[in-house]
Amino acid sequence: MATTAQQSPQPVGGKRKGKSQFLPAKRVRRGDAGGPRQLEPGLQGILITCNMNERKCVEEAYSLLNEYGDEMYGPEKFIDKDQQPSGSEGEDDDAEAALKKEVGDIKASTEKRLRRFQSVESGANNVVFIRTLGIEPEKLVHHILQDMYKTKKKKTRVILRMLPISGTCKAFLEDMKKYAETFLEPWFKAPNKGTFQIVYKSRNNSHMNREEVIKELAGIVGSLNSENKVDLTNPEYTVVVEIIKAVCCLSVVKDYVLFRKYNLQEVVKSAKDSQPHPKLGNGKEAKLEPDSKLNQSDPPEGENNQQVAPESSELLGQTEPGSDTQAGSEGGAKPEPESQVSEVPKTNENELS
Image (cartoon, rainbow, N blue to C red; front, side):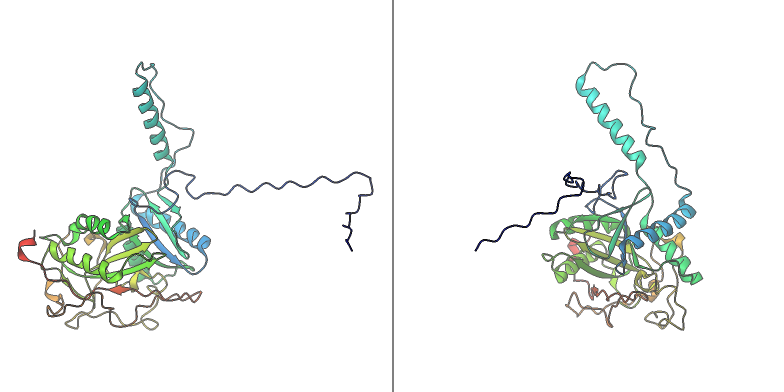
């Protein structure tokens, strides 16, 4: 037996109510101010991890970076969008030259609208990337952590780690090797030298092999100067490798162990709440690197305290003794394991530069 469809009741006035029309809301894009809207090769910036609240994380990052950015580089100068460069008054007979000039004017106006700090899509959950313009990320982040370490004043709630990113490239082994050979020179190429470790983290990427990446990067560091040695206790330099999808983020930072792996929640804890200061191989306590010594070309210090790994060890990609947990005092974020290099492969003397 067929069932009859129920008709909707007619309105009292006798007129049928028209169907409501709903238009999708315009999605606000983070890159409307100009520049790239997502993480891509060729950027510099700051990679920030948080505990489940990315919007609040971006707000805290802007507040913190603007506070210390104004302190180091002066207040940011804003330019109205209406103030665009004017073209030449006379007409150009050459159409191609006129077109090139117009394109140049458009690029110049876009550059004037770029902000000092601009959030872009990172491509991973609980990760925020702040693109920087006209500043040195490693110096700014080190200054922030140094101040928080001294004052023990907590300034963030959801931000966990804040890692400077000095360069990005494609996350393929050949591209990474080619880029790292030039990128690592200011810190490790002779006459510069120092103890180092490599920390590796991969997100939303399955085609990169951790051991292979660590082995290749360690080989590059060793080929730049044979006196570069591994030190997992308190290295002078830490090579940070962060891979997100098809983008590899690289940086070389100082005081990585002293600043609790650049964790803003841990660095403000008092000595009673946190672990004792890291010790060097001879029992001396690790000292803070001042901002004046963060120049990439500065010669390394403390050569007598370098801890040389035994050359008999052939194993690469070993994990640092002790669990590398990421402490998030609020929100109960899961720890982020990191892999570290344990030995530099032997290099032929003929290959040394």
